[in-house]
Amino acid sequence: MKLIATPASPFCRKVRIVLAEKRLDYEFVIDSPGNPASHVSDFNPLGKIPVLVLDDGSTLFDSRVIVDYLDAASPVSRLIPDDPRQRLRVKHWEALADGLLDAAVEIVVHLRRPLPLQSADWMLDQRRSIERALNVMTTMLGERDYCHGNSLSLADIATGCALGCLDFRITDLDWRSHHPSLVALAARLAQRPSFAATVPRLVEGVSIDYVAPATR
Image (cartoon, rainbow, N blue to C red):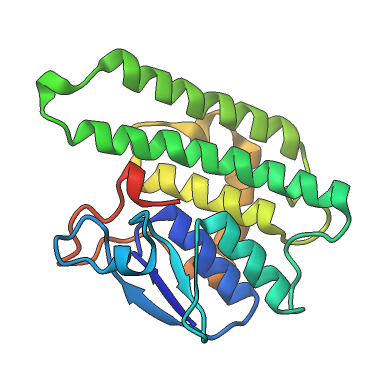
């Protein structure tokens, strides 16, 4: 398998962590849709990353589709429950975390616009969405060690990637002071090799390595 992605995209990070937890081998191909020489659209007509290229040459895109496939592809470390109700709860966490990421990425992209085209009110709306998501996550997590059940699941992975994105991209948002349970969760996840190996970073030569319409 090949994963076409960038090291800084939180949606790509989610897929990379799942691959690591599932102990699946793959080739990591760094390619950003923001680069003029990008080949992403050759594999995904929507021009978005991440893209998973399977051994038979077929492709999967959208991080949610990819992680669903990967979890079913190997019995190692199941991350999404088979029970429909339990599965729904895990996917609920993922949707909430991905929604938080959508707002965070929108802020990053908006700040790259010329100053006359920026809207303080619009960015405030995105920040409020992030804050509401964090509040709901805090309530849902409570005092538990994991977002769902008694072991790592996709809920934790998606949430951990969202929190990591805030630390990496929205550095002036002091979420840690108001959400100690999420801070503790992030600290536990950071100890896992899969998280430690995928800490977001920029890569020289990769321009605008994730923009709102280019990742999911």
